[in-house]
Length: 302
Image 1: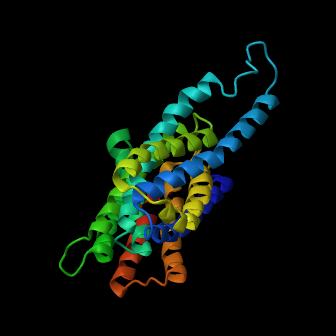
Image 2 (image 1 turned 90 degrees about the vertical axis):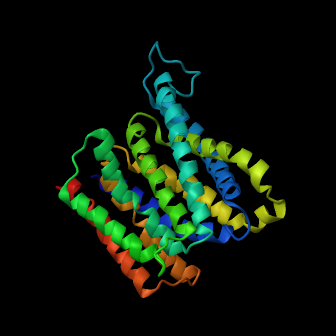
């Protein structure tokens, strides 16, 4: 594991952890599709000039050859992997981020952060079931601990999980698919191009739901401008790009461990910025889930 890649992934996790606060604040003014659609379009537009600049520099740094087409910004190979990869990432991102935003409307920032981090358990399981990778005993143990932690964190005294917690749990499955799709395409396509296309895809998918279901007023969007800008420029434009670049040539299970640190940051950010607190039972659930997150990585390390 390269230290540079680990640092990029940790930076992404830190930005995402604080983004839970932005998402919670935005939920007071606008609905999920509006928030995610606008922030993803901002993220894609923010990256577009960077894509053009980086590709222009890369093109001019390559040695001249007779077969090179100086008028083409991207090679056929880059487009062949970048476009379908970006669209696939965008679909997973749209599903995951929208479910997460629906959940944050009805649960706390800290709980949402930790439930989302369950993808750290799901990634090795899905890799085993669909990619024929062996699942070791520590991974099985992490699944059991993750379920125990989820029970302590989310279940009420009536043994029922809240609707908000359930939405966030579903988003964790979507982000599991997102990590695995990135793992497949990150070493085949340009990372910034892949990120830009995924945001534009997510934003375009959200547009019909914004126009025909949520009908946001401009005053509502303006009231949520700061959370939208943070989530669009930093959480999308910067953090998701860092994830794609940082995941290149890295084991997806180890990458998901580093990314799961967003759960710790989200709890601290919710406590410091929103004055949200967790009960003793919920704190115990967070601890158990974080232990499960760490144990899930042991097979990869060995």
